Length: 265
Image 1 (tube, helix red, strand yellow):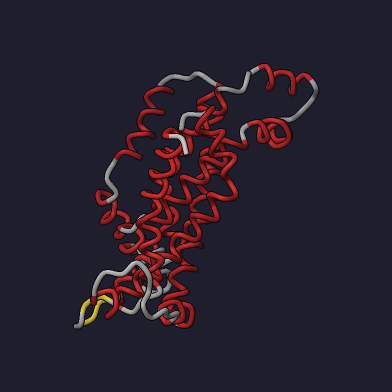
Image 2 (cartoon, rainbow, N blue to C red):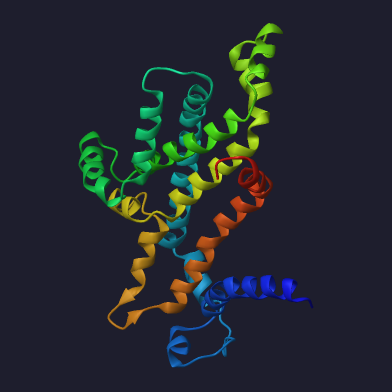
């Protein structure tokens, strides 16, 4: 094997090592994990996965996380599409300053907004709901989606809009049938980043939920006991949290590749 082929293979194996280690731990008992080093489970067990799939608290944590992450992705894209179109097609007073202000919201630490969101949602009755977490994450995901989509839309010639209007297309029809397909790569990239941020974000998700909409990240803290953490159960939960992200990557993989080549990403 040539050196230029061997180096990428070694690098990929190095990146996959932590994932393999996590998967191997998920099939071990906590006593075996703490007992010593082993590449493979000495006593293969599915008890950790059985616990997660049979305990309502565990699987509802996954369902809650998927619900608010998906809801946030939809809301963020619906808000970002018209905003990005306006920034890419029109020039108005303060447009660059407004665009920069949107990006500064994305740069702010999540912890800054935890207490204000908690007080606001408690006052209006949104605390411990999926919508509360989804809307809170929009503060960070909408600016990111606008930034990504604006780059894709700016690469589409304005003559396309003018030609469609001359042909008698209304704006909604033009946007859905002509413009939307031309930027679907950008939409796929924006959807991926919005979903993944909402899926892995922990602080707001834990702060704004209690029981009904508790995410999987909060559920994983239940493994603590007087004897320590149930490491095998945590590993199994970690493996299952990778699955939704892997599924999203699979469906938008072609769009992400085009996005890195053509867009702002």
